[in-house]
Length: 220
Image (cartoon, rainbow, N blue to C red; front, side, top):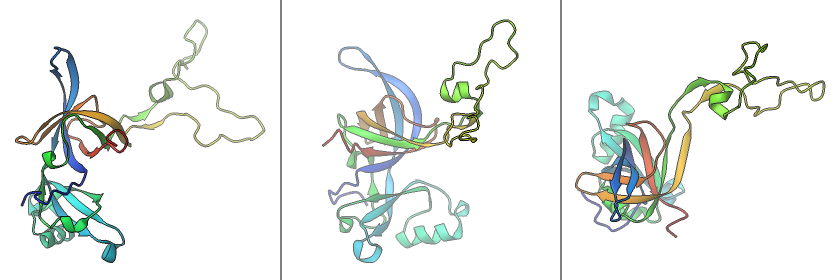
């Protein structure tokens, strides 16, 4: 089934393919990120009278039933669809405009020339020092200095308050955080190949799963 009701969910799940460039009418290069967006299927419908709010659950990237657990298999079977790897819940105004098993493509949600917000997980950098993590200058590397060139330096706070404040910029795990890039221009929507070209960069490495939504600020 296709999204024939005319209702839009305003969001779609996609997979980051990588970056490239295209040329506009003035022969200027535009850096873009290619995303394989959708199609997604509706796997659950939530209504105010039963769940307290209106939303639908969409699923992306079908997988074999052998790789899905028994609870997930039963959940997807209730919707009459095959198991999928990724699911996202999206709030909607009218949940009755959708039906279980309904297929939604990228062209049903987004259009070229509009703005989009992209949410994803940034690249994980592992345990990193302060120079990489916070762009610290580092200590002097002149004659007579010990091998502390990349060390953060003293962090003591004397007898008062006799502790290190929370949030102190120090070495630690870097990356792997959820981030949203807002107001990216939608350069092109290819409905036949389920491709989406967005101006600029988006979070995550190649193959990362992202959620692309209609911009909450720019399109109003």
